[in-house]
Image 1: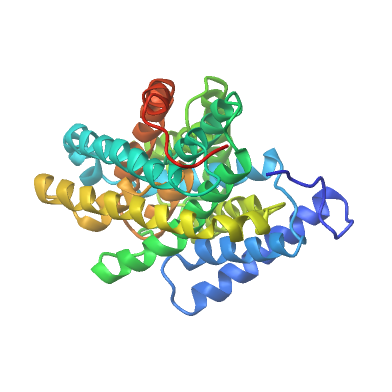
Image 2: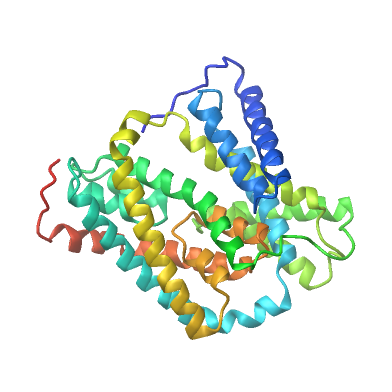
Length: 357
């Protein structure tokens, strides 16, 4: 899936990016105004995707991505409570259950795609891996039969649908409380320090190739400062809103240069595997909830095959334990990173389906 260097606007990149973010904010405000769960986030994503389809969006450069991750991390870190920390003991068992769902979901979806016309076994496998997209594409690029365009269609569509689908399912459980902060607000000087230190720690974590490093670095700084009472209150609600708009735009710009013709040809297979993956994740989320006495909404978000940063912020926006959700998506990333070459080798040894090339 090739990305164009610029939108049809013909504006300087900074102005085009500002236009993209403004469009995301307007769409987010509209969706939030009608009461859709996590409306700022999902609305910004949808609005940006529409702009991208019209070739009116611009890819976001590193400073905007940093702003998205740092503002998200600062807001999420301030929302982590002692009650959330007390539940860390349940994480290993929950992560083990999630890991089983990742394995079963990957091979089940790959089996389905491998039987679809035009899908090679390697393409089917990489399109079915739920997460760690940069690493997945890097490995897929080394495989001669892997069709990166088809892989991109399935992976981008999966994240997009999850961001809109999961909040509605969670809303049906009645578990949404929103990300409202209580107590006094942090002074602007404190907020500025948190954002700066969050960026420094996050940048260092990215240099050490920590998954979601910018987000988790800012979370650590903000969570630690608030836990130690170094920050007296909570960030202004505007910080969370900005974070949701920027993350939504960041997801939405993935549709720049999207191959809609290929999407039309691959839609049935992509949608089918999306619902299979969500169904398997949901089943294991129910199992984890029953076995460990955890809320279904929480385990569903943690087990959903979405992006680390987006799903962690979505948990925060819905008022669901972001520490639990983030830890599980980080564990998913590590699981995929450590096992992908071996899983691919195992898969490619299997009987070949009717698909070719």
